[in-house]
Amino acid sequence: MSRDVWELLVFRRAYALSLELHRASQGWPRSAQLGGIGEQLRRSSKSVCALLAEGAGRQRGSDPEFRRFCVMALGSVEEAKLWCRYAADLGLAGGEAAEAWQQELGEIARMLQALVKRLCKPA
Image (cartoon, rainbow, N blue to C red; front, side, top):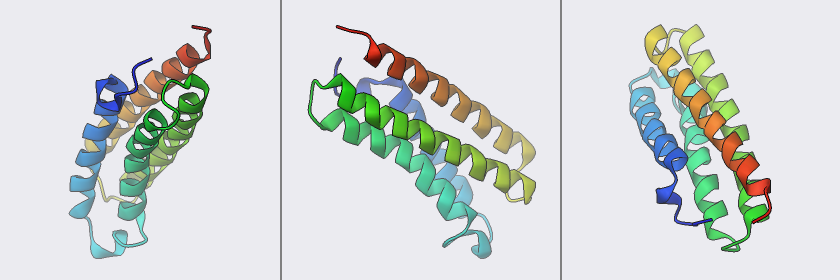
């Protein structure tokens, strides 16, 4: 499997969403920023990308190692979904925006699950 992380559609979608979430959360009240929901959402969404990039760069050609990082990225997707829910429930993000983020995170999770499954198959 290629290890240029930018070739992976799941990485590009996760990266685009992390930028969108970062920009949106910067407009939230100060109380939601440092140490709050905004920071947590930015951190968890960026973590998806960082884990994929790190996994792709470690032990090039090692599907089990890359798979391990993909599984961790799945955990970060679920965390980001939780912070999106908090943002919506606390009125920080509009319902439509939060729903769109949740849907995109769900799609990213499905793509990661498929990638993990593919990495389990013998070459």
